[in-house]
Amino acid sequence: MEKISATIITYNEERNIERCLKSLQEVADEIVVVDSFSKDNTQSICKKYNVTLFENPFEGYSQQKRYAVEKSNYNIILSLDADEALSNQLKESILSVKKARKLDAYKCNRITNFCGKWIRYGGWYPDKQLRLWDKRKADWNQNKIHEKIELYSDSEIGQLKGDLLHYSYYTIGEYIHQINKYSELKAESLKAKGKKANIYTLLLKPFITFLINYFLKRGFLDGYYGFVLSISSGYATFITYVKLKQKSIDKI
Image (cartoon, rainbow, N blue to C red; front, top):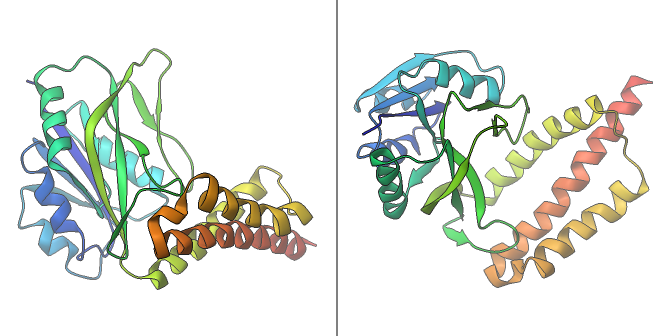
């Protein structure tokens, strides 16, 4: 049976980290937590469990997660965010892989809990995530946001049964705060690629984003929060390009 290193990065995650750690107890042979000097009880909660804890300054999501992998002892990596947890079915799937792994990496479906409601439409589910892999066959990319595992050319990938439970936002205010944070990173990324804001990206693209998520991707089936998320997706697009436009103005 192969051994698994679970890796988590944290910063002020006292609200979420215990749920995450509990879900890993049956499947992980070691848990590596890399903390960015939390000011709450994150570290004290981690110390109640059998984890290996490191402190490391935060320089980016990909860099931090790569650091956690570097500190792991085993080749098979299971990466979770602090606000995620394994469903029972997903645990069983991972245990099956431990007993007889056939592929280099595995994806799973992630379902998000938004303000107490599981979101199943509007492009939010199934949110396929590659979270279990052989670290000799893949590595984190360099993206500032939406970091992901990039497989080497000869890697084979499969799909796990069961959902990764994502407890994302407890309030709409938290979501708006995250949009502001991510839109800044996205604008910086677009600027680095030479992209520019224009009439389409400022006026039409946000509206089209809403229409796609609410109607084509059936966000309306999630009721009130489906409407909120679809509107917010359009707003996130708008504010990203507003910031991109501002960066070009500031440069003049």
